Length: 455
Ligand code: NAP
Image (cartoon, rainbow, N blue to C red; front, side):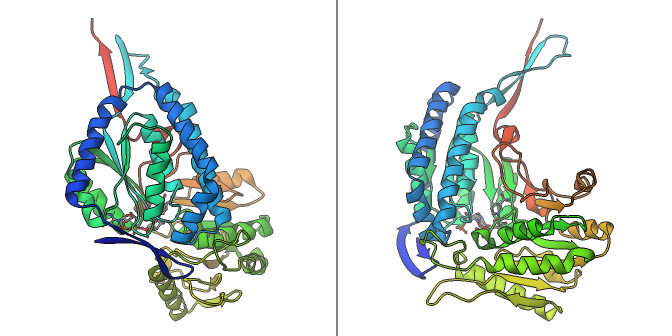
């Protein structure tokens, strides 16, 4: 099987790689298991030095990394550079804070001396998506490595160059051989990785389908899993909100990364009093995203990452129209090839239509008019997803009360939902389970070991 890197802006094949054979994968896992024997004995300060070096390299190479992502998945270089810098931040964060997060915790009310240790367990398999091809990997690799685990990466098949680049960054930072390895494999080879004795857990970021399949495979082997899956985040605009700011943020959510972000707001739920104002501002703000060449430093929105993804979005928008929705496409298509899609606003789709229950993974915004706060909350929760959500209102105490009613892993008030190294991140419902980032993230893949000193 071959793994192809295809430029979504030109539709040209940039590079082709042969997938690793099953034998090669098993021998890498053996090497990783052997490397763990020494790696787990390293002190936190030794691991910290290496992670800090990885951060330095990420900053030095941010322009190069941005170009690789642009060519493989269409991210504008401006965003790619920022993504590389955020990866450096997560390496620095766990390098600085990891030891304290994993420091033994005394159990104070026990009769004897009792404490809890957080020990490494072996190799973590990470199965990652292409949409933030560096960030998704570093946000799980940095805490796992700091905790003393080894990491193997099965990246999305459309970003093999990103995958190999990440492996090289850890190597160049001085991590011992085989502590971090990239496996160029297809999704059908993931189960065999889980079969290896040294692999004790899997962290997958991706779609519901991939999540179900990999979580089942892990469960069947009694191996732990963390699932970071899709979202259909609501953004609620109350009548007293700063409507302009809310609409500008809505446009960032739908057009940044060409709308291909799990935690981007996808459903805009707006009180009737400010609905028209919101729509007008949304049109203005989304029109500013002119699709263009991702390698051009001025480009704000590139193409979608693949033909298939664009077709899925086209089909969803068609079904919105069939259900009675009104569609407005903004701007004009760039000339030539590329999987571009224009910023699109969709109104009047009946909330009970099937298409409303789906994730729109591209620059299309579904906007709903509501006449009460209760209706807004009901609609926000009328989805099987539960990743993030935001509430826009001048009344912060009210917004905080409403935050408790929204069934998601994150709620932001008057701000864009984003992943922040300090803040636990993850979802409920079909958006997955487990948490990344913050202190919760580093404790997902350790042995929480109680030590009791008897008398
Ligand atoms: P995807 O098709 O599920 O792929 C994600 C990863 O899973 C890829 O490495 C893919 O490998 C692998 N995979 C797919 N099916 C598999 C299977 N049956 N067994 C083993 N591995 C499998 O998702 P995507 O289209 O790349 O990414 C978009 C989705 O990810 C969206 O739903 C988005 O919301 C979600 N996402 C969630 C988060 C979060 O933090 N919650 C963050 C980013 C994205 P191949 O490429 O080889 O198929």
